[in-house]
Length: 114
Length: 116
Image (cartoon, rainbow over all chains, first blue to last red):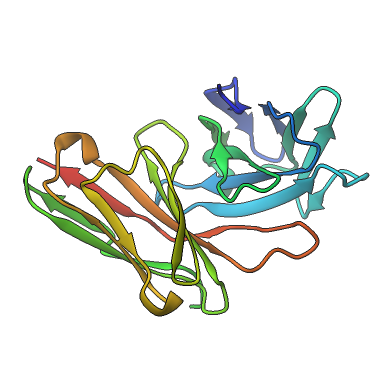
């Protein structure tokens, strides 16, 4: 069964505007971690932000924030004040309790327009 | 540069040949992971090492695939008798021992394999 679902294959955003990338997940564990990674065309996966299932506040890292809605099992990434360098593929991932591996979604391609 | 490094960055080979990839993790990280990513998809887990011990292998890792991590430092991933379906990006990641339940995996630049 798919553990991570990203329903937006591609998105366009105007420079300096905000964009929200959707991510829903499926787990029966109470303890888990949610991650977002950025993958530019060069291929490297760059860690952006982490949200633990027991964290009471939404995670923020600079221009990145995570809108965590536990009851809905969603962990949407918000990128504020988009920059041309934000153009990349973005992946949502989850690590469940007592598991080592990350389970990734199919990704969302973001293109920032000048 | 103290990040995860992978070599080679690109590899083109003919079907049936053997290939070997290397990953050097961040020095203080004791956990190392290999993932495979095909075009348009997210990475899929292949295998995991804690120090030198290989603790988990995915069903994706057929008997043509073998991974090692001697002395718990760098790791190698070998594919024997390559097939065109092996063409993919092979990503290595490392992480430190979890703190407060948080374990972030840091990825290398990947090795792009093309099997002709």
